[in-house]
Image (cartoon, rainbow, N blue to C red):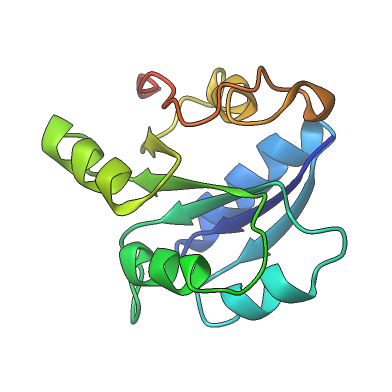
Length: 141
């Protein structure tokens, strides 16, 4: 299974996301903000496979944090998925143009969210290796 970092500033949402992914066998590293994100990505061994990054965070937003990750030296094998309540097509296009590997809208559908995340993981981690493609938006519950 995969190692997934989830950056979400809403405690209840962070707990829900982490629980849904953990129940599927993934190792989840929950972060309530981006303050330790770069440090976490550098220090974790093996490196995380996937990062679910909330766009609207206090302080540095998801776009700024993505730039920090892109500036790291060395190879980066993780995928970064925008996690946001912004569901307009232009918002999705902006996130993908900025370098996010995918886009998941909130509120999530708890029934489909784990499968949606799996589409961004390779087959060994329980996904279908659709690199660079974004999964279809989940319908709210």
